[in-house]
Amino acid sequence: MAPRARPRVAGVVGWPIRHSLSPLIHRIFAEREGADAVYLPLLVEPGRGSLMRALSGLRAAGFVGLNVTIPHKEDAFALADKRSAAAEAAGAANMLTFADDGLYADNSDIGGFKWALAQKLEGRRPGRALVLGAGGAARAVVLALKELEIGDCAIANRTRKKAEALAARFSARVADWPITPKLLAGVDILVNTTSLGMAGEPPLAIALTALSPDAIVADIVYRPLETGLLRDARARGLAVVDGIEMLMRQAAPGYEAWLGRKAVVDDELRAALVDALHAEAAK
Ligand code: ATR
Image 1: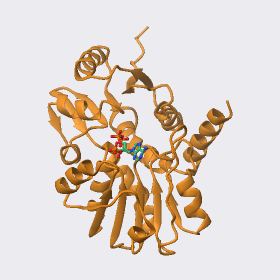
Image 2: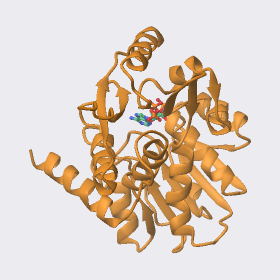
Image 3: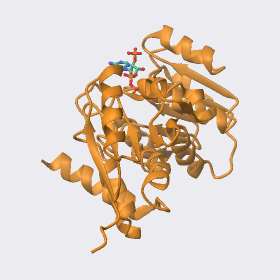
Image 4: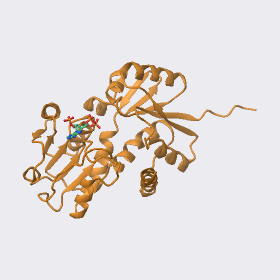
């Protein structure tokens, strides 16, 4: 009997990793097209050394690629042999491909956020954006805003020095923290990339009264799915982009590179993720 072809295997490395929604997203992508594929959550301790050891073991085990999440995105970038322009721009990678000629790093967080925002922009070209936070997620968001040619992009962060460093790197402005209503006047796109509003963290307390009625409010936090920020924005009738939108889109390129042909991001996928989050919250 001829041996069966080996299923393609990929995964996501992070610490912690138990709550990652990526395995569910990839399972749905694979089931839809009947792909013979496996996608595993992999717990890898923080540190470049432990990531390096994990990568060499996973390559030997036949993995075709990996998503990379907190705290490994910068180390993944540093360990790669080749890097995409997006990864170079961000200085971080959320995708690693085990290619024949080495390890290839890419960044689909930027494209994920860009796509999620573009859905709401519907061709409009807003003038001003304000990004809250200056960590790894803020980098991807600022790059996406630049790619969308948002002319005036400001960054506000509790630790001002970090906002200054990010602003200098990406030709953005620094705005004051904490956020006052005055700072929101004239802002077309407000994005929270801080951990404020996340389950177990303090709320992000800002009054949205000064935002114009056609402003868009985005939050990359998705636990809870409806953060206080998004609830306030919806109550004001503003367009919102939640964390699930970016998450679904950043996953698609990995699936298409490693496991199957076409990753379809649609309302059905979103509903499955929302159900999973609700089930988790009910526990
Ligand atoms: P990520 O890679 O997800 O962006 P991070 O690099 O740890 O994560 O960044 C977290 C962001 O949330 C930072 O901008 C952080 O502000 P500091 O740079 O001042 O630490 C912000 N943040 C976390 N807790 C906060 C709090 N209690 N108040 C204000 N900002 C907070």
